[in-house]
Length: 255
Image 1 (cartoon, one colour):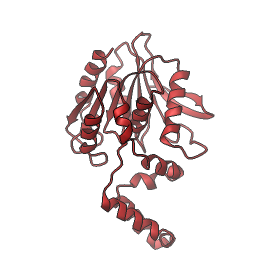
Image 2 (cartoon, rainbow, N blue to C red):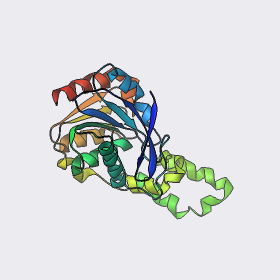
Image 3 (cartoon, rainbow, N blue to C red):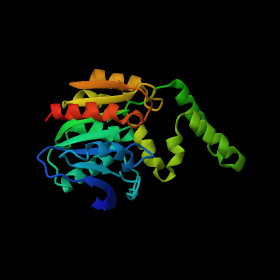
Image 4 (tube, helix red, strand yellow):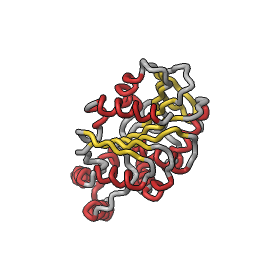
């Protein structure tokens, strides 16, 4: 699958496109944090023989796309994706987002920023975790942060962040302020605003975005269907057919 480049808002972004001359809506795939467009290649390969345009985008700061010059919010990412789809001369789109990509897809669908045929959220983020333990660990880490700058204490800080489940926080230092903006926004209130057919796919053993989040999304999003699969945060790759087959039926039903 060949990498292509496009300039959006002054940034060079990488994407992969499987082109098909078809009147059917294209499928656009958005990856998660610390990931890139190639995570969708196994899924795209399943659709490759079909007569449908498929596109996977490296979001700003990930894969082979350039970093944003200033810290981004979820809305900033939404604007980039919308401009990308318009520049690619798309009409209606089936939008798919995994984890962090799900945050972007969710807000894009809820705000009506682009004409979508369907929305698919795969182990999506977007609902803030209210865990008291998580809060206390984070608060404690911030209090002693200057002390952690001492060499031997750095590993203790990393261990605390890992206990918080925030490996993402330390794995992408150039996107630190962006990360804080992204995880700080709770998209719960946007769920009821989504009014297009929505497919929710969740790994029952997901520890990063627990199934409870998927159940809440199912409750709040009108015209949504939840499929619970074996596996964790990347269940869609653990058993590709468990995602690709029902997803194919879903989009065909809604065209």
